[in-house]
Image 1 (cartoon, one colour):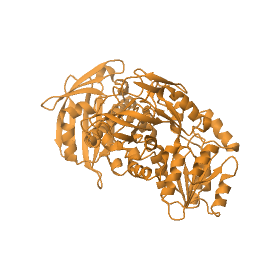
Image 2 (cartoon, chains in turn brown, orange):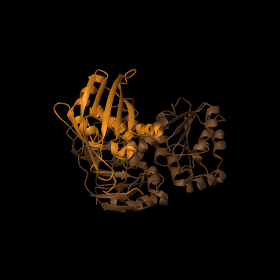
Image 3 (tube, chains in turn purple, blue):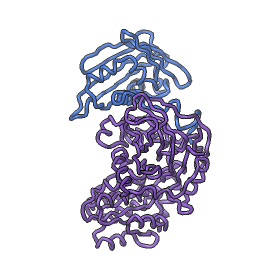
Image 4 (cartoon, one colour):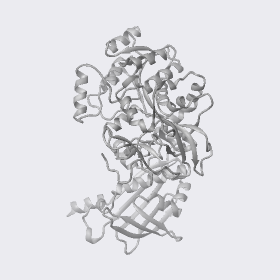
Length: 390
Length: 171
């Protein structure tokens, strides 16, 4: 089959690789109908995350059709159109039973690579370096999906392939970030980043009853999409974000702040220059401008929900969190806990993830798609690939 | 000399613990199934269990070397399984697996310990250099795989389909 392979920093090529096969009783093989780029892929492509290997097939956000099933698979069948969350979860262990699916205790084939970094291994994930399991990704004609009974969700009629695609990662990640905020009547939620995850966090916060959602970014087309979703928008290059948020909240500050940006946050001023130099010298991987602003902006006793992906960061303003009594919630997506309700929200038109699909490419054109996505060319919000159509 | 001995013995022993959400009785039965042993130690050694419960081990060294030994179970009681290698072992060793009830609804705590006694010719050599993985990884990975098997009936793998092409190197 054809697949998009990583061959080194910024070196992506579409190659012919072996077709996947059923390896374990709970596996299925999916014919990938759609897959998409994620901001966290850029960390891998840019070499900010170690334990990538030449030939790694990328892609962790996808949907498709089941074409082969293992003997223990009972809940889905050949021909089903399904969406699959990015983390591989068994559904049986203590973490899965407590809806903490990305922390699954049993799906990491190489826990010895991750345990020294995190203390305990997490769930395996598709195409996210060998320290996260070394599973092959979905920018390919076919992908092997373990634990199909837990991880494959049949897409109902009325939900398009494009909408279902983002219910693999952007939507459950964003929705979980909003869920972390324990939104109450009258709450104002500020969200840094209007990429796929940030936009889905905005819709999530609205569904969960936020009085007002404020979206922060610098790219006009992304801010326009946030506005179309009903958010108030702030361009951080034009205003002092912390002051603007006070102004918009009668001096209280947002009840909850969501960081949907992560380690490659842009910014302005001296702090940004300092962060960039340290990142360039590999003294730290994270710039964190958005996170620092969110910590300052959130109201006293408010909630900080972190969805952005981070490595290590120095000069972290822990004292500010402590003195303000901020509650911090964070996780990689516990997608399996949210996908069923997200499919229902999409069916009812309350969640409109297909809006993220701004650019379409064949698999053969996927390196171009990543280039456009990385450089945000032509207002590219997400590049969507169709691996099983030539 | 005493420093050398203590360093060697530290290096040659490893322990790991984890918790599995199943009753001890069920886990003990699963552990003693012959195919379980061959599956959970697969990264470290080929293990073949005979009908009498003894097991033949072939562990791989980093440069293609192999070490062989046969173990037999010495003790089984409600809370502990103990095994050790017999005469003629390339690298003598002993192992214990202890079961304790975990608090609340968390199932059973497992404590796995393995101790290697390097033979005379290589006394003082770090045991970690004999095998292709260090003792700490040997025990923690065996337990991880055992938990996966106990909870899901399978062991997570990408073999022979890793994301990278065969022979792919870290970049």
